[in-house]
Amino acid sequence: MLRRGKARSSSTDYDKEREHMVESQLMRRGIKDRRVLDAMRQVPRHLFIPKDMRDLAYCDGPLPIGQGQTISQPYIVALMTELLELTGQEKVLELGTGSGYQAAILSRLVSQVYSVERHATLAEQAEKVFTQLGYDNIVISVGDGTLGWPEHSPYEAIIVTAAAPDVPQPLMEQLADGGRLVAPVGSRWSQVLAKVKRQGETLTKEHLTAVAFVPLVGKYGW
Ligand code: SAH
Image (cartoon, rainbow, N blue to C red; front, side):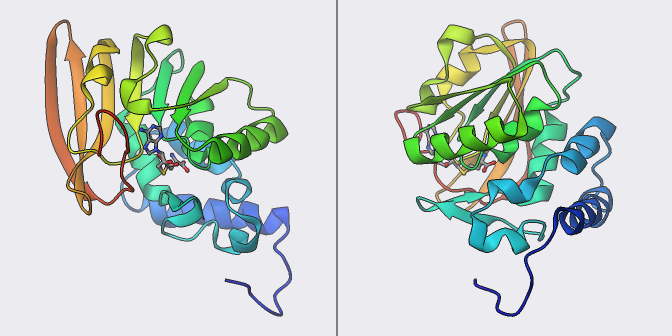
């Protein structure tokens, strides 16, 4: 991925690329939530990408982040965030911190983000970027996220950014009344985005678009 002969992009170049990403990849495909679009404009995605691949940060696809894991395509990050219908005061749980980019986007939109990652090295790297950016409303725990994070529950929104055969049961229990959950569910290689809403004791589930995520590995995953 080393690009010879090309000077490293400046932060102004990145700003321009990010604006272009928002218009050509997100707005054109139907992302409408203004707050989500603003967060995608604001968060420097390139800082969440390994240094030797930063020039690809604003491309229309996922990228490797180490440990065999990936940062999702910008459009998928925006779509899943929009589906959570965030208004500002929520406490959100994310499973699969990875690079920390999705958590960073969420942190601009809600009051507190809790994120669980099973690889300590990824969690540490993500934490460094949050500190660098001064994003102080994200807490990461290293462990099996399929168990959720009961101490801080219930959550008004839950997002799973790795794929499981179905939504892990503990997450359903940690979803607040009126809460929304978005997760890729299906087989190892292809899934659909599922959106769950809780109204009292009633959970309704709808299946949306086709996606492909790395596996959620744990007690209630693969
Ligand atoms: N949201 C991330 C992308 C995540 S890739 C981003 O914005 O970059 C999926 C992540 O889920 C990987 O980092 C993987 O290690 C993690 N993961 C897989 N199974 C997990 C589990 N049971 N608990 C917590 N994290 C898990």
